Amino acid sequence: MTEKLYPPQHVAIILDGNGRWAKQRGLPRLLGHKAGSDNIHRVAGLFANYGVKYLTLYMFSTENWNRPEGEVNGLLKLLAEKIDSETQTFHKANIKLKHLGKLDGLSPQLRQKIKVATELTKNNTGLILCLAFDYGGRDEIVEAVQRLISDGVSPMGIDETRFSQYLFSSDIPDPDLIIRTGGEMRLSNFLLWQAAYSELYFTPVLWPDFGPKEIEDAFLDYRQRQRRFGRL
Ligand code: IPE
Ligand code: IPE
Ligand code: MG
Image (cartoon, rainbow, N blue to C red; front, side):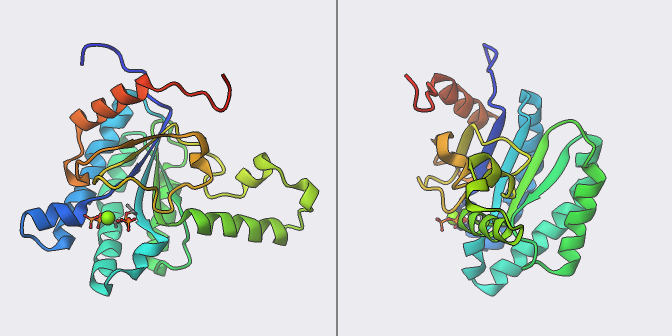
């Protein structure tokens, strides 16, 4: 790297392409998910080294429940294993873990693991790593509306700031840069509210192969963008 890259404050990534990565190698899809989950630690460290403050990883959507049962169970198992094996490492690296998404569809054991990991790391001051798991942007918006109503907030009491406070992401800023691996150019229900002015970057590289070179390319591209937020 020749010049200093001024990193975005919040990078959010749609981790796509695990299945195709496995298929290219003649392996079962779950081994692609395993390779993908092994890449999380490496990538989080790289972003932390760049000085990125928030990294959000989209790992399982509310629509991914519609996949075959074996794949869904495999993904849930991988998440549980990852939390078990990595939480201490993240903690030692001063990383604060956060979960974005629904909890009620997850098993009590998995919910407990998420609770323990977020509790343990809650005072850490380094990278804030948000794992979007059983996350859907539409679901997040509907749940926010439900909670506003049940809190008795009057229609006139709702504005954009208030509404944002009811989202899963209430304590994190909107993403500056959203990266999607795997070549598809869509959001697939990711951060629909928060992405209003995010820069979008798509790469054909499959998630298990996403590494330092791809991060540098994404940052170089981001640096060329002129963010106007509707102004001139
Ligand atoms: C992303 O990889 C992980 C999840 C969506 C859970 P995919 O499983 O979507 O991989 P492809 O898109 O089939 O290659
Ligand atoms: C998006 O990937 C969801 C996650 C990466 C968690 P998908 O593979 O589910 O998206 P589609 O179905 O191609 O839009
Ligand atoms: Mg996919």
